[in-house]
Image 1 (cartoon, rainbow, N blue to C red):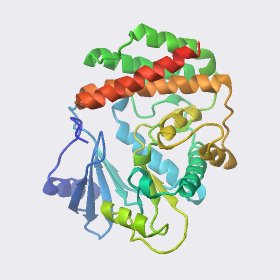
Image 2 (image 1 turned 120 degrees about the horizontal axis):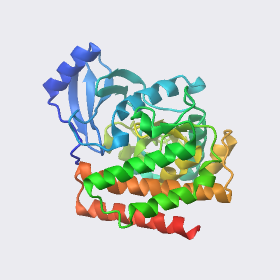
Image 3 (image 1 turned 180 degrees about the horizontal axis):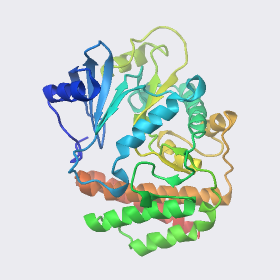
Image 4 (image 1 turned 90 degrees about the horizontal axis):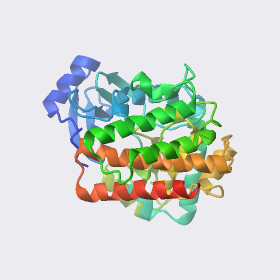
Length: 350
């Protein structure tokens, strides 16, 4: 995906950056173009390890308020995940982290969205249950300072309670919307009123937990190499999956990536992005896996109200980011529809 926030380096420049900052050079194999915000390269490090180098936007790039410094969030999340017992949340290993870049290990498998057409209903159910369990383990991570909000952004985007933090997060996007003249198709005052009306529901969240908030299928890697020969072919097109086999081992989740949007907040907010990969309702395989692994989700009216607020927030974010990233009219139209639908569903609760 093309974006104005992407930083481009030549192979020689990337090699120099790593040698000077991490003490190891690299040979670029290819650019990974699926990302929407950062630039990523598949490389071979001088010590022989394959890796992915992720570059933050240039220092002078126009970004949203919550996006300032969020590569530090991703590095923090990788470190916290690595400290969990038993590899409960699979993810790349953080090899190096420097000013404006990360180097992580290469995952087995391929992104879920690249394999979806090759999965049987039973495979999808198995994977969704496993993903639910992984998400529950991710949500055991809590901030060391007890605050809600974005961990690496400006201090105004965090607070000691969830209602204040979430309201500040919305306000930051509304400020960005005004700066970029984003077509929200609804007055900012109307969005503020909807958030205020949900204050009672937000107040039910008293313990901050790590929320990835971008767990759509493209950020979830799965191994389908032993499901059958067809999925093995699919894996080969990506260049990261193993060759297909004749075995009957079920598919598995091999890792979660792109943690930079993470915040400390309500674990239920995770369902908003997880819903892009399938059913995330109370009777879903995802929620069954989540609760079996110890996660708690009680679909009360208050929780459903919060989910509507989080859908509104995501819709707002999608529309506003189109400005600094320079996305085209087709994508902007999709984002505007997403925001409009979220607003309609939230107003219907009133």
